[in-house]
Amino acid sequence: MDLITLLMEPLGYDFMVRAIVTTALAAVVCAVLSCWLVLIGWSLMGDAVSHAVLPGVVLAYIVGAPFALGALVFALIAVTLIGVVRSTSRVKEDAAIGIVFTSLFALGLVLISVTPSQTDLNHIIFGNLLGVSIPDLIQVLVLGVVAFAILILKRRDLTLYAFDPTHAHAIGLSPKRLGALLLGLLALTSVVALQTVGVVLVVAMLIIPGATAYLLTDRFSRMLVIAPVVSAACSIAGIYFSYYLDTASGAMVVLTQGAVFALVYLFSPRQGLIGTRLAKARRRKAAALAV
Amino acid sequence: MSTHAARGQAPLGQSAPQPAIQVEGVTVHYGEVLALDSASLSLDHARICGLIGMNGSGKSTLFKAIMGMIKPDAGRVLINGAPPAKARKEGGIGYVPQSEDVDWQFPLSVRDVVMMGRYGRQGFTRRPSKADRAAVHEALDRVELSEFAGRQIGQLSGGQKKRAFVARCIAQGATIMLLDEPFAGVDKRSEATITRLLRELAADGCTILISTHDLHALPQLCDEAVLLMHKVLMHGAPDVVLQPENLAMAFGLDVLNRDGAGHGDSAGHRQPVQAIDNERGI
Image 1: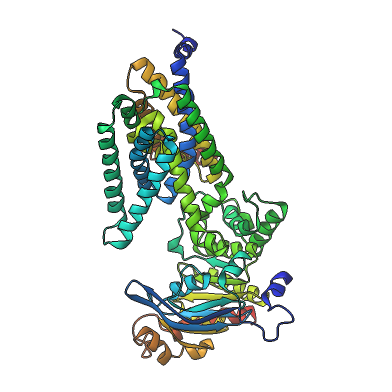
Image 2: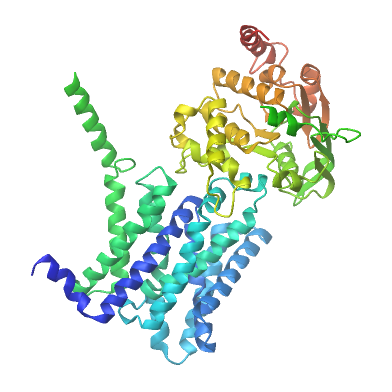
């Protein structure tokens, strides 16, 4: 089998095409958002919000409301609870995050267990890439485009918020509002990614691409290009791997992202463990030749 | 820069010119801890004022109160006679953060950081205009960092980093600048450069408030000095405020160590700084 056939064969199935389109979309939106999350140090927050939306999604399913609405409400509840626990007790922030999101996640699991039609909802936890329906795809598309557009249009403000919230305040912007905007987008994006890799692995899509891009460049504007491109490529590759190796698709997507991060971590010419040494050796050699 | 001078003065036609910064009886608590205790301070336009106090004496809190980041439990702050929110909206307040408050690994170039000074004047997406680019260019020129404009912000020396943030204030057109420990981690030569730059900005009409531990730099840099220990203990000419007995009030011990034994005495430091001054012919 040559490469073309290898690549074309899965595309013969509609469900595979839908899986690839959905994943690529989710990967791009998550990757763009991840650039800010890794720089602010909100990875744990990403983990928390993406888990905490579960009960919201289940409740939305029960009452027939849009998943995104339920997710947004519970993201808000989670962030508020974390803030309250942290600021009104001696419990530190990481502990507060851990307590709140695991409790909400557990609430979601309980709700799933008492809701008929369990099969559908279990997909929220582990993702169901290969079972993406046309309405699912449309939902991902709409939410993804909205989140992506807001992120790109407000990218300079969000970067200012990440870099120097005090300056943002000093020039009359509201750091609080920018933080809230970012958290809202985090909730929205979590819903987008739920469909593909599920609640448990969403956080990977929300952290790994940004971290990978951060190791490759010193320019934020370039991070915003590298992260989504790498993430989309990894995700699509992951789906192909899962097709041919017959493995769980969502997990395969994350595994590919992790593998690429490992490669960059080792070989990045700027930051990589081995890459920087190689670059140094090359420079030395060039210097020796010049003499 | 004439724009600075024009914007730095109180509006024409006003009977009594308003002070640039007026802090009236500001009290701030963090939980049970008293950070500022009815602190009052008035600073005129185009003056440079050094804010001296120990760690935890309320210097940062005073900055936050002036920027309107915290609501005082009592008292009020006026910038040019109006609440700080107005000055913020107009881009009048510039802020140079402490080094430890900045993520120096952040993937932004020096130019990017200075451009952030312009955001308050830009549209919804903060797309830079020609005027914005020109202002950034001019500000970088002014602080002599043009050749480093493309560098990642962390790849600058300590003094250059500070100048980059001062350039951000300049690009912003700030008439009030707050500098938090601008001389920490800065070598003597850079310190002299920054001092000269700030004096020029003050001559253009900027009002500058500097929190610092660096007592020996004060007489050259500042027109006035404030001793802070939750309250404003003293406010006057630097050489008066820096009298050992006054400093002892703020620091609770004899920091100047008049018998010469021990660390950091100001008499020892003053001489070399004076020498630099003479070279510049001030």
